[in-house]
Length: 181
Image (cartoon, rainbow, N blue to C red):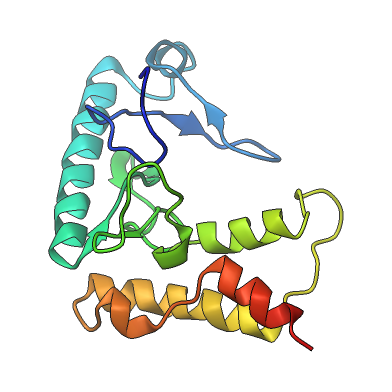
């Protein structure tokens, strides 16, 4: 929507269906395309759409109880014996953005206190890696920070820790420490 700031909550939840690609990123898929390709029936589309909204609300509320914001996540469905089921993990550091409610600021990037892979993406972007060519080797300090976020997402979502107990460093702090002789 017009006038939206960085990291601002959307006025309503948006569903952006995709399908797997043989290579590269997932491919956006409209309802019409899904029906035309015979991936789902009209009734199955309705069921999946309703289930996705309900799951998002549930996961968002659970995360909020533990001091996190889930602005978006991916959920995958498949079939087992013809029945539609959720086939992927619930929101994790790999499938969702997980932001700290305490440190959340509209108009700002959230990576400093996020418990997701955006921290690593931000680091790679800042050192100039665009995803082309072989990835750079990762310094142990960065691996430690990424690990804290992976394990931390589990601990925070299950109520075993609070975000502030994880002692996270921002990308700026990691880069500054790495620049020191």
